[in-house]
Length: 136
Image 1 (cartoon, rainbow, N blue to C red):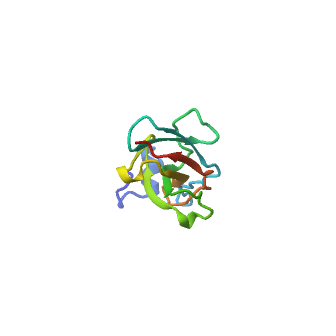
Image 2 (cartoon, rainbow, N blue to C red):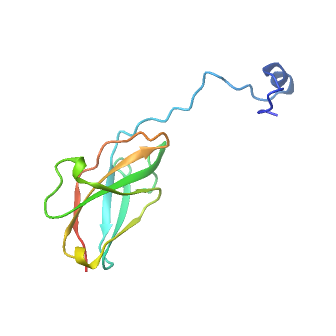
């Protein structure tokens, strides 16, 4: 009945059901914290990336309004100085995320930067750069 266009607010009041507030909008705050990262190097050709919020690093919960974590990487010796040096690997909804590599990438450095993304596509700040050797 709530969504029936023939039911007016007067009807809703008379029935004792909620009258929607047309001025109320759902506000999703832009994240102010960055993800922190731990990487498990125990599998060949793979990084198992665990991420958490900087404010609650021992919990798996993402900040309020966040739907995922963008994971970006640059492969090579030099740490990226600019975000445009990175490529998007995935927008992970849950942690951990498994980044898989080929045999010709073994021994190279993978430099990761992550940031939160909200349900409205708004982005939080970049994490610090995390660098790990690709295991073989």
